[in-house]
Length: 422
Ligand code: SF4
Image (cartoon, rainbow, N blue to C red; front, side, top):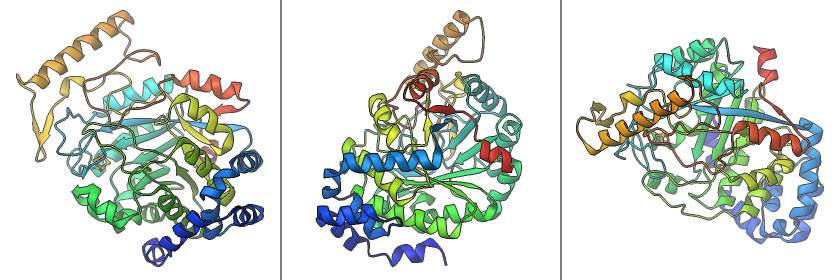
């Protein structure tokens, strides 16, 4: 049995209704419990629960400090490729978007990783679109292998694979697997994913279990808030987390909290989740799952991230680029478009002008920096290659680390648990 059969038997609609109609007393009773059910979680994220947000925030803050101490784990994404065979309406990398694309060579991956390491990070998330030709299993294995010695924590956010295909990646040194379901609503999922293997909802839903069977010991899950009703998504991912805690119990589990950001294609969120809703959800996750890591990325603006941090966040990205080569300009000279899986050179098209102008800007930057190929966090290495989405917190990693210290927390750059169990 997998989570698919459990998910299909969940009374999700009645849990959402229960959440919408819960009274203050029901919320108080659920908050008083030491072990919460899905129905209790539905109460915590209810409109009535929103009226108790300050109280819930104090409880959540205390629970987080008790389990995690005053520590925030830092990580940075490294985008390997923006090639993709899928069409996801909300994503700039969708195959039909006429964007500039590139897949970094191993040497370029090392260059990007060097720039990230120079900022202090020792925990990296390798991200790529889903494209078996450009982002093959062997390519991923080789990327991990060249980074392994320098990186005690390597996680992947790439197209879902079979267990047997994950095993060589674990053997090469990857220890974490992140897969967003995007939406747990079947109908919205079908509408958002118009072409490519990602259309298979159940295959994606079972990915964390396949990853666990292959040996990944850190699993990350989440919906992408802004596609379906946020309470429906939150109850669904809570059910998913509960299942994984029972069935993949040797793994450390994280839940991310991504809200949709603008991207190429100009997709607008279909549903609204306010900042206050997001804060309430952080608290509800913490009270439901005291030991689960909560991840907040640079999708959210600086001020909001600073405010959410003490409520229950345990892991943050900083100084992020969501385009391949974003930290150093690596791969810029190879930019192209991809049509039906074939590379189309830029030639004399309007795209070439953009690429060349960008290359000139980059070489100018290098000259000003003494020819160094390692990016400083403050350096503008904007490439013409398109990012997956726009980030909202544009502070450097050092600025974020300073802020974390000012809030009384310690930024931790290395995942010691992973290093010790490796
Ligand atoms: S969300 Fe992922 S699978 Fe979909 S288009 Fe973007 S990179 Fe490709």
